[in-house]
Image: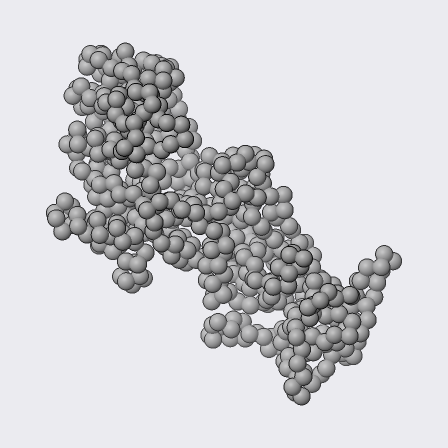
Length: 568
């Protein structure tokens, strides 16, 4: 990627701020970090932060650290660490170093002891409910800003002026596991009347008797995010902590800790969050979906986790183009899922090979085609890529076409196959429907037609025109396949706000087990992108076998007739 392309993918205000910091000597280098919590898989909402951190470091010749925020061991697993690394690499992100918040637990504890000795932290014996009540409140339904103040001011804890030596002793005993969970916490001593409720003596450590995936049972206290985050940035020499707008309220606390400790002054800069309609951004709810079996796993193609998008056939290039092409706004905004689909469609149009597949087949018998014979026809692999070449497709007397491409009684403006009408078979011949065969229930089970042998290749020598071209596969040569047709998992635009049981779309997955595809797809590899002509973009699923390939719908092609029928 060229330097110009990198620059275009960074919000201008971040680029200008970093540039100014270098010019005025605030920092002599640039180091950013990715701070994922290993309690789930990455989703589309994480990608914006990842890319901004990565491209900012890249533009200024700096480096990126991947630091896992493993401060809550009750929800963290090594599985998620490995998955996050793999997904980030798949996006094309490179980093100089992998670290963990737990790497700094010892130093972080030393810094906490320093604050206690400075009279800026104390051990509080209040319950969580008592602390919450004492902290005061903000106006209901409002978010904090510098001009707002609480309806109910904070009240000092009765332990706020506990002697330093007593707090130091209790903190050490907390660390050693002498007290039950919830009995004590370590709090910073800041200002219980502050307009920012987060600065009203925030909790720094809580007691948790939980096995940690890296440190084992060494620790019985674990740091809160606001205590570990900024200090870890400082310990690693991170110059710019780039994060979404929801952390604006946390910035004064971030800066307070670093100032009091006289530590390396990492700078926090915020940008707008990516919100995508019909996409769930809550990792807690995503995890619940997986654990309840409402989806097939973190890689279910209906999810906008990176694992799900990968299995659905979305490329990393499409994701990067979408996220960096949205543009930056001052406030968090919502992006339509249709916009994401359009970017995916544009990306796959250039790279996906073309193949013919019939998903809901009905037989078409060409009565005047020689019995027992077949021939090979030339078919283009990708009209958008001249280097993709062509392939041979088999044609025979009996072929499969889509059920939707035939109507015994056609509605207005229907130009596909019906009795007496002539259409073009893609790459093959003109055919005219003559009659149908029905079963005992009166259902059409077989369509009959005649073909014009002078129209080989799909064009008439005498200039005769037809209004429709349909795709097909030879019944004799076709390969049976399973096709999974995916739709939106949620039936509301903002699923994070709803109860899971009531917002799931019951028609989000339709499995077509009797589809037929052309022989060229016999050796398709898992993850390979392909366009089923006139249908949509698909990719081969991990469940594919040589005997039965499985394809996932990535995104539909635009289908004017389907829209007309739906509207009607």
